[in-house]
Length: 111
Length: 115
Image 1 (cartoon, each protein chain N blue to C red):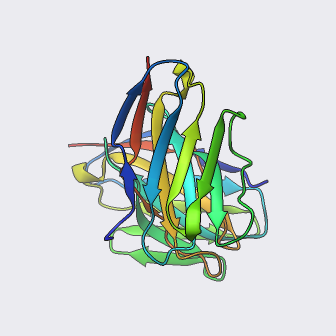
Image 2 (tube, rainbow over the protein chains, first blue to last red):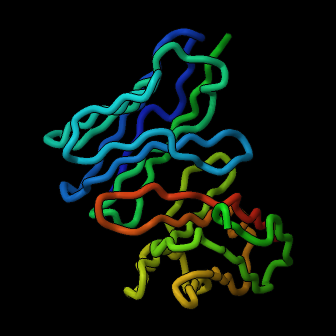
């Protein structure tokens, strides 16, 4: 079955710096890769996603890159702000079926 | 409804009792997922329903766990003979279904505490 590994488990950055979170997946049939943000005590919410026919996608300060050959994808947050502090989860889906999540990354933005 | 709704929000039960957790997905969403999240941990996949297909039960941790989805809409996750290690937040999510890959929307979760 699909397996998704996520690194790092925790990440501390200074406000204004960039943050990068990386994930690898095992099944080459995976074709959908969403990223979720979960603030303390709240439900996970989608922040950006990418499909296998695209190599990069950007939405304001957030970007995601996908390397299908290497089977890894990354989340990039630029100009980090304190409100970016949360747990971030990557996920992979095979043909839009069940989502398998990474273990999560705790991001702390220090002001 | 406007979003995925789960009930109850909180449940405290005694060890050995059975519990039922309910999920109302977004209307028209054919895919429904259950996940378990222990304190400070990731999202553990439990079960996945898609339309009328047989559910993917590969994530259920033991035969004490079962889930059903009636009429392709509401889903119930049942835990029999609860144990303390079952304490966690149980999250339900729904999406439009497979194909190009669609966003999964999460409910607010049910916090289960087994005492």
